Length: 104
Image (cartoon, helix red, strand yellow):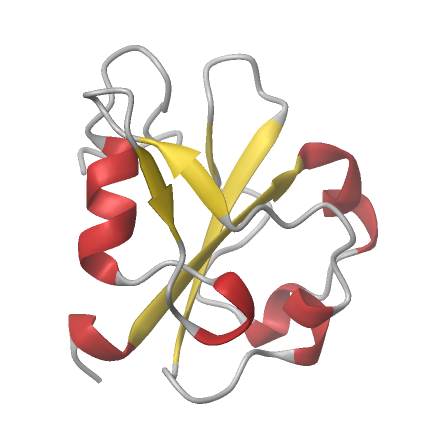
């Protein structure tokens, strides 16, 4: 699977307790969050389908700000972010943390 086929979603951390981690490429132990810990980023492979666990998230966001303060809208299925879109969001200084033990 290539990066072009990977999709990303940002959602509220309050939903992590009941989330089915088997359907995404992350685990509850290796999450990327914003610095407040209130928003979580997850990813999965497949540009044409969104896992049902992701679809059921009620706090998914479909847009976020980039480092210039411009709105980045998710253009993937159900408002998910593509690789280039999420990179614009993650490049915003002082907003997103790396997962524990990661050097991404």
